[in-house]
Length: 96
Image 1 (cartoon, rainbow, N blue to C red):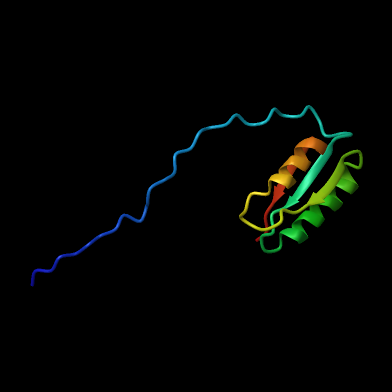
Image 2: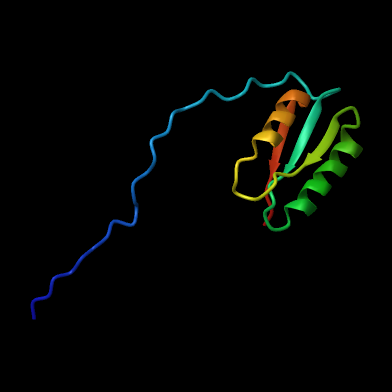
């Protein structure tokens, strides 16, 4: 029994990417503004709140601000601009 079989490559075609330099490391966080970014994943809001409380208890000199993008998986240029203009660092939080 001779049949023709078609096999598709599941890897697809990866997009071309250009490497970027990572941000310089801060010497410390005291007195700095750190944005806690809730990425809108499942349970990320709970994680971000726990992280905010941890900073308040253990590093009270760090100013934390919680921020969310308009929608999940979509770039939010306004949010990024706000963090860049007003913040010194950002932590992206994801849930379970």
